[in-house]
Length: 165
Image 1 (tube, rainbow, N blue to C red):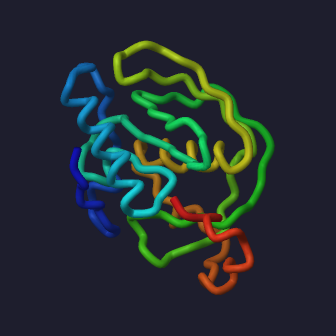
Image 2: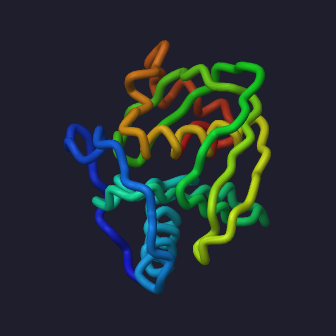
């Protein structure tokens, strides 16, 4: 496994729409493993392939604390519900945090690293992280959704992990 370089804004790679994965092979497995290692090293909770220079519909989310790592290949949002505004950050925008409105609930269809299909339902912080990463695959960046920029000192009252991708 390897630590990959995280692409930072304003790189045009971050605004590109990603291509569907067609080959489920060792190269894809290595990308997923490297993305997870990179995300953990950067102290994030999610990472999308364009953030490491790969324009593929691949993203991961890992909330830690014993949660399973969510690997999403070719994810499609099939249902959303509710709404909440919370603070978010992004590994591609170091030091930028803002209040973003997102659905409280999401249902996603995606593929595993071996190509098998699965369905996932998530709520609250997990749903937010999943939707943030899927936005990356469509070239949509969280800074375009910020309702109010938040000074990092403002959210120190949270548990220390809130709002960090």
